[in-house]
Length: 63
Image (cartoon, rainbow, N blue to C red; front, side, top):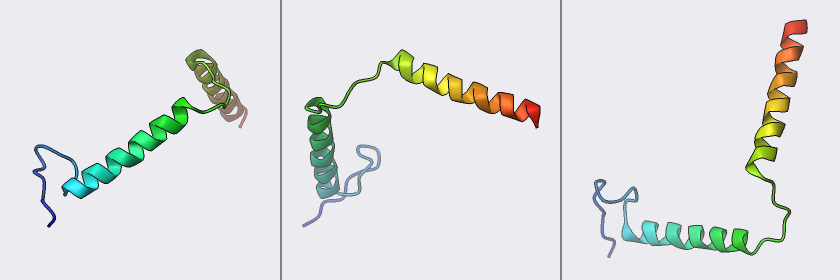
């Protein structure tokens, strides 16, 4: 039997949905923690984003 959850308590309609999401989320976190991909610092990511934004702004001024 599916038990409906109160929207005041949970964003999920049923306990099964909440548990399914929890399993999925924990798998994603575990995979990220054990990943061997290179890690970028926050400053590097923000710097790259600012560079892209500045390039777009410069192109718009020329147009």
